[in-house]
Image 1 (cartoon, rainbow, N blue to C red):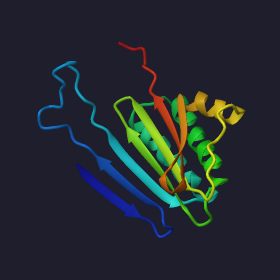
Image 2: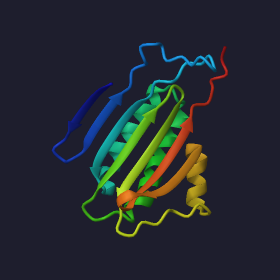
Image 3: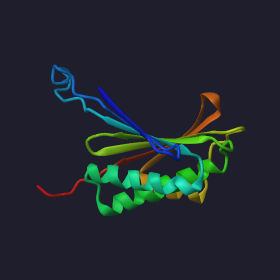
Image 4: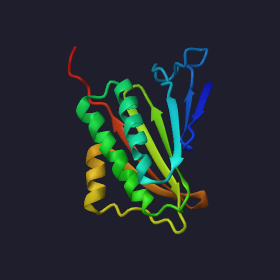
Length: 163
């Protein structure tokens, strides 16, 4: 496992963790399938709308790395922006927003978290939530320890259809 971390003067931190395949080739005797190595990239920045362009750019770059289509990339950029907007309205003033990207072979999970004073999960029966589901494929929200409100977006790349 290797980890790289950078921090800017504005307080935006980016950490990347790459997990290597196991020395045994990481194959499963029962299923005959190889376990998937996953990379994780974490971006931490002030919980302010002015910094959301950093997340939109990171989202697009990472999705492009996984060969998502241009439409899928744009959908993810919009979904991350909307998820952050839902969270920022509840964020503790001066807090940091953390976005964790977990990259699979043909999928991406994006978990956006922010500490809140009295966190409330976004309602799943709203138009905004329906749009998030349509853009990302799958959306969940939960309140974790320390009043940390998290929205998780999961998107799987559409198969190209070419042989």
